[in-house]
Length: 370
Image (cartoon, rainbow, N blue to C red):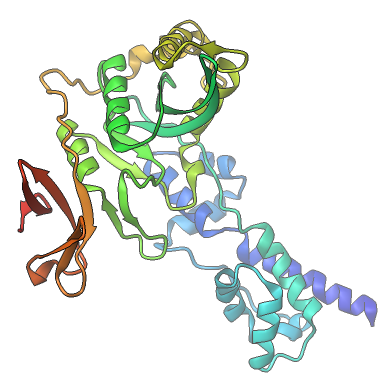
């Protein structure tokens, strides 16, 4: 009897593996690689799956869990499996919750059987992380990193702005005392000047200096209006990782670690200017001329084919500080202990408050509304 029970549970595990072998993240990876022109067989090799699996998922608009007929050995969960496969993600793969809810659905089996079903699903819940090689001039990635650094005799927390070019892997890094928007803009402009151009798009995480709303559930994305204005001024397309998935921008993640592990150890600096001068010298003499582990070339040599978009004739961006507020349900906006009314059409919307020469302007989508 015990052997029969173990056999049944092994079959359940095997069935779960077959059902969940392709996660929603892997399905998205297949689609994106194919859109970028990667051959189907190459996709299969990159993701470690069968070519037939790749073909099957390219035919699907959205990810759908694979199912097959229930055998007699799987009678304990028969009739509950489709519900389980959708519910398991919502309860974060918690077998105890699933067992409790299954009993309310009339399930008569054991908790161990539910655990056996969930176990392989939990193993495959981590989404695939694929390194995308972008075309020259197509994409760069930006991120912040921080570390404690000796400035004179004071141990100071320093924030490093980093931008890496996706094709050549050349990078620009500059140290700041904080990560607020003025420094973010200054870091971009420093990188654009250093490289003599920019890529068509720039990939970011989800920092509050750039994003007001990025919902994981609905996909809603609202840019901070000041950063949106900055991106439009230079003409690049900002792109953002899915919430809680920073590994999408792995190139700059690796670059920031490289700075912290290769440049910083054992160094002391007189001040922030001394740090940044030493950092640029290190980029020229070390980072730019190393043999990169991905393309096995020196970033400096590969940069000649990067094909950046020229900024000739583009004036520097003029940063004018603004404050952002959301309009309340009664059509009011709060600012410095006062409340101001705006047209009812803007209830729930984010507006920018711009204070100039004693006058407060409220702006939404580039239009002054009050």
